Amino acid sequence: MGKPKVVLGVSGGIAAYKACELLRRLTESGHDVRVVPTAASLNFVGEATWAALSGNPASTEVWESVHEVPHVRIGQSADLVVVAPATADMLAKAAHGLADDLLTNTLLTARCPVVFAPAMHTEMWEHPATRENVATLRRRGAVVIEPAVGRLTGKDTGKGRLPDPEEIFEVCARVLARGVAEPDLAGRHVVISAGGTREPLDPVRFLGNRSSGKQGYALARTAVARGARVTLVSANTALADPAGVDLVRVGTALQLREAVLKAAADADAVVMAAAVADFRPAEYAGGKIKKKDGQEPAPVALVRNPDILAEISSDRAREGQVVVGFAAETDDVLANGRSKLLRKGCDLLVVNEVGEAKTFGSEENEAVILSSDGSELAVPYGPKESLADVIWDQVAPRLAARRA
Ligand code: CTP
Image 1 (cartoon, rainbow, N blue to C red):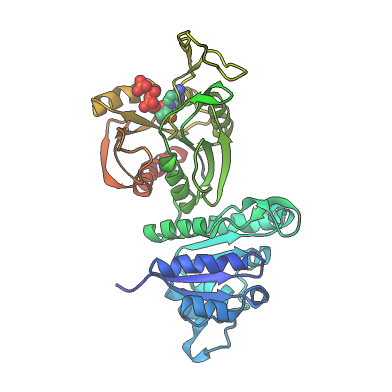
Image 2 (tube, rainbow, N blue to C red; image 1 turned 120 degrees about the horizontal axis):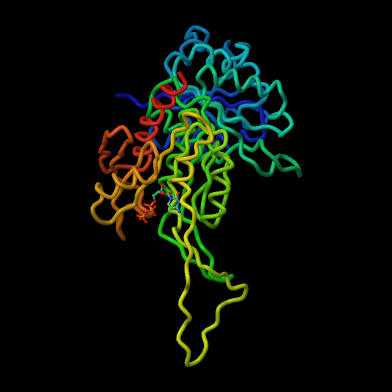
């Protein structure tokens, strides 16, 4: 089998320089990349850079090498087309099917998955014309990655930044791995909690847990690649922001509850991958707790935190909302999982065995997915992204069935 063929479309925005890094990641990970820049983008990055980094010619117009019919061939033979950055103008052309250069022609002839990574000023992104163009592209099956919030060209900040090239690469890799041009979570809003809560004792100490957040982040990345709008509620993680998610950072279980409930109000699915502390210190010491000579430390009194998963499951914000929980168990893993599924009232419970060297912080995971309909699915040891995809494989048909 040859290398997967990727077309990297580059349109004329300052973020074009970040596409060089995306190109490097794609070529270094074994993809055959053909760069198709627009004429305007060559003001930012020249043809020589694209040709040198990709090892392929980089043409802009349909009038070059006409005998090879490039405007048809490049699109037809691609396994993935990714446009990064995609300007407002490019989104408009793609939505309306204009074909006045090689990239827009390629978009019309491609039958493979297409990913757009828009970058522009906030006003342009929020303009009704752009909103409608993005909605049109998504309806037709393209994955349009939500821009990041942050510093834009000049002094202003807002939504419109191109996400990190590394994270755009992750979306491309997930879309290519699935190899289907129909994102099955398109039009769905999913809420994912990730990481581990910290319950403060005093300004410098907390009760915490060993969750790294990697499984929740893998769920967020795979959901973006499957076309979902994703709210990621992240508790105390040290991971790169995934591309295309609405990221809400929280610290404690109570903050996580508030953020998840708010986002869940219009969500199609909620996945509670976070390790939520069951207890918090009954009292918070406003100043650092000091040791006193000759005195034993005072015991720490704890109070229960609300069970967020049980609350969301019993009180669904939307009819047909699919709720997924996780269960971290050290003993009697499946038996405990089954009773936890009943107790929590969720639709699916992803059960994994945890231990010092298992699950927490690792890149891989194995699990059994228990369903409220009684079925069980064992997912073999593998990357957390693979488990995430299997979870979405279980969620997507449930969503489709309930809306029908
Ligand atoms: N969870 C939650 N709110 C809590 C505790 C846990 O929403 N206060 C969620 C977790 O996000 C996870 C699921 O419940 O999806 C199971 O978490 P786990 O720690 O395994 O279960 P517990 O309810 O804590 O049960 P136990 O400690 O008895 O094993």
